Figure (cartoon, rainbow, N blue to C red):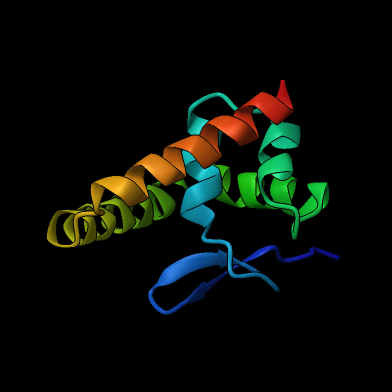
Length: 104
């Protein structure tokens, strides 16, 4: 019996039972992150879901990469048309640095 981990919703791929887009996991996997490291970034997912998502990606690479590219274009367009205010960028950078220091 095969277990499903990914489905198409709203024109994109998502992990079943979550709001996590497959594109986010794929980007991290492409950057060399291990499934365990990826899992640590998404506390609502379990390791089986991460491995299942990676397996889905590897079996459907062309379709998934097309989805990743489309999502990146949409995110770039949104970012270009909705620039963050400098003080918000600084706050997020401080928060990011705090999170990174906790992981070390």
